[in-house]
Image 1 (cartoon, rainbow, N blue to C red):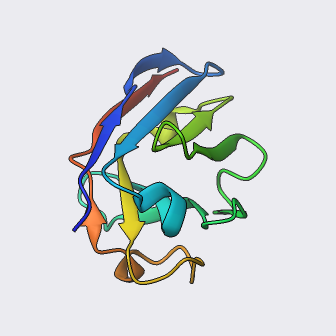
Image 2: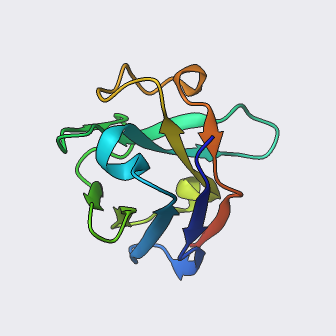
Image 3: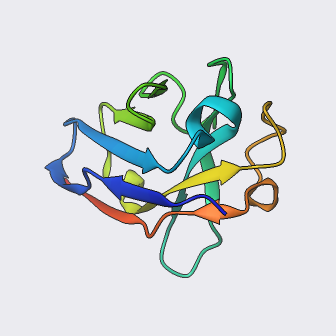
Length: 125
């Protein structure tokens, strides 16, 4: 398994921005599909965005146009820039890695086997 650690969660007012950072061990970022997921209280974890080994992003419809996923191979990090945040974006956000594939199969959590500890994002109205 890869070691993943998230940074950058916090509280912001509606319309504000936050950037999440996922620091990964080894060559995880360069070689594998990486993803961001979020979990609302009492709900299953849902996919937010993925990025494959060559940098191709995919987004959930709910965040398309507001969130941007990117990565830096040299820093072994994946980022989630979240703009125009709304109260419904309040959740725990998780970084994830699919160590079996260089491409991303989709936003389903079943494709991802390594997870970070999560970062709380709270958006107030």
